[in-house]
View 1 (cartoon, helix red, strand yellow):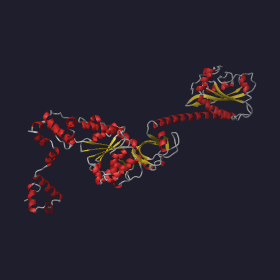
View 2 (view 1 turned 120 degrees about the vertical axis):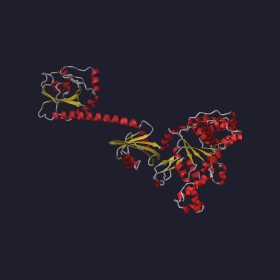
View 3 (view 1 turned 90 degrees about the vertical axis):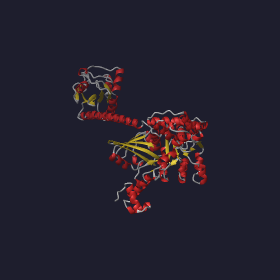
View 4 (view 1 turned 120 degrees about the horizontal axis):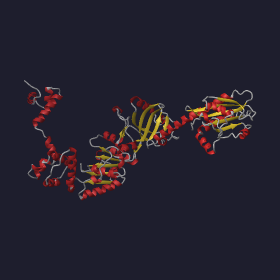
Amino acid sequence: MSTITIEKSDIGKVLSLTPDKLKWHLKQNKELLDVAKKHIDLSAKYFDNQEFVFFVFCPNGYVLYSVSHRSTNKMLEELSISLGYHPHKKSILHKSINEVYGNGFTFGSSRGQFVSSSDNLEWECLSVPVKHCSETIGAVSICYTIKGNNHGYKPLLFSIAKGIEQELDLAKKHAAMQKVLKKHFALLNHNEQTNAILSQSGQIEFISNETLQTFGFAGNGTTHENIKSIIPEWRKIASQITTTGNYAKFDIHLNTIPKPGYFRLNVTNIGKEPYSFLLTFTPLAKALAFTNQHTNKNISTSFNDIIAISPITKRLVRKAKKIAYGKSHALISGEAACGKETFAQAIHNASNRQLHGLTIANLDGLTETQMEEELWGFSSNYRTHLKRGECAGAIEQSNGGTLLIKSIELLPLSLQQLLLNTLRSSITSRKGCNNATFVDIRLIATTSANLQQMVKDGTFSAELLSVLTNFSIHILPLRERRADVLPLFDHILTLQANELKLQIPSIPRKILLILRRYEWPENANEMKEFAKRVLLNKGEMFAKFKNERQFKQMHLNLAKQRVIERIKPLDVIEKEMVEKAFYALDGSISKTARKLGVSRNTLYLKLNKYEIIETN
C-alpha cells in the first residue's frame, strides 16, 4: 500500500492520471480500495432519496473509487469526474480534501456549488482521513445536495473511516499471524519427525502434516483436538515437565492411532502462553535406529579387517559375504575367541542394515529373568518394587538393524520359544506390558556348543535351530588354520602397541616358528594376552630359554600359567582363612576354633603366629 504524502502546494492542480499511472495507483492502494469499497457500497444503499457522491482518494489526492446516486451520474460525466481525477481548486471537493491533506485536519467540510458558478445546486462536501500505522494513507469523502436535516452524514463518514482503519489493522495482524503460522508450519514440517505445539491444557494449537497423518486427524496445520485423546496421561506429563525442568523424554505406547506402537516423545516447555509445549513424536524403532547409527553400535568392522591367509578362512569369508547379502537369520559356531563376533560384525556391515546399527546381547552370566529383560525389555509396571522406568530390550533396540545374540545355547527353552514367536510374527512386547510393537530385525546368533546334540538332549529347540541354520558358518580354531596365526599375531601386536603406547620389540625368527606351531588353545584371547606380555617385557623373554618346550612352559600355555600364578604358599592361605573366620565371628575364640576344626590352644597359637592378636 502506498504511503506517499501530498504536499500542500499540490492541492488545487487540475490533473488527471494517464491510464498507466492510474493502473499503478490502483495497484499501490489495493488494500485500501478493497476495504473501502465494502464499507462505502454498504452505506450507499441507504441514500436512495438523496443526490450524493462517495469518493475514495489516494494520498496524492486522486480519485480511486466513487459511488453516486443515479441522478448524479450524468453530472459527473459532464464534469469528467472519473477515476484518476484530481479535484479542481475552486470546487468544494478540493476545499474539503485540502483541509484533510493540506492542513492535516481530522475533518474537512465545505459548502457551495459542486464545481463552478454554472452549477446552481447547493452542495456540501465532507472529508475524513484514513490512517493506518500512524500514517494517512487516503481519505473518504461524501458530497450531497443540501435538503432539510443533514446532521447524520458527519458521524456516518467518521464511522466509515474508522471501520476501514479497523479492518486494515485486523488485516495487518492477520497477515502477521499468517506469517507466524507459516513459520511455525515450516519448522514443524522441517524434518521427518512428527511435531505439535500445545497449550497448557493440552489443546493442539499447531500440528505438522506428518503428525496429522500419524494421529489420523483431519485438517491442514490446525485441529481442534486435545492431545489427551492420544495421550490420556498428558496432564501428568505436563505437570512433571513444568515441575522438574524444561525438557524430558518418554517412551510411550499409543494405541488409539491408526498404526499403534511405541513412540519416543520429546517434550520441551517453551513457557510462552498460549503455546506452552513443543512435542516431537518419533516411532521408537526409528529413534533407536537413529541412535544406533550415531553410537558405537554402528560397527566399522568389515571383511577387509578379517585376517584370511589360509584357504579355509578365505572360503569362510566368501560364504559369510553371501550371508551378508541375504535376508535370513544366521548362526555362527566355533570355539571361544575364534572370531565369531568379528564375522558377525562384518556380515552386518556388508548388509543393507548397516546404517541401523548392530545391537549385541551377551547372555553369558545372566539369569533367566535377566535374559528376558535384556532381550524384550520391560515397562514401568513390571517388578514395580524395583522402581525402574521404561526400558527397551535388545530386540526393540535393533529394529531396522541386526541383533547379535552371543552364547545362544544359554537361552532356556521357554525363552527360545518366545524368541521363535517374535521372529515369526515380527511383534515384540515388553515385560509387564500387553501392548505390541512391530519390529524388523535380522538375528545373528553365535554359539560354542554343539546345538545338534543339545536338540537331541532336549535342551535346545529344533524349530529355532532350523530357523538359524538357513545360513550358518563354522569358524575353525587357530590350530586348524595355522597360516593365519602369524599375520593375526602381528595385527593384534600392533593394536596392543598403539593402545599401550609401547614400541614393538624385534621378534626372532625361531620365536615366530614356535608361535606358528603352537596350538593356541584359547585362540585370540590367549594371543592378545601373550602380545601384551611381549610388549610389557620389551622382548627380553626371547633370550631366556633353552628350547621350544621351555619357552612354551615359561611364556605360553597361559591358562596353566594363570593357575600357577594364583598358587599361594600354605602359610598365606592359612593366615587368610584364620583371619577371615576370626573377624567374621566377631572375635569369638570358641566359635572360630569350632569353625576351623582346631582346639582353642591351637587357634591361640595361630592368632599369635600371624599377629592377628597378641596373647600372653
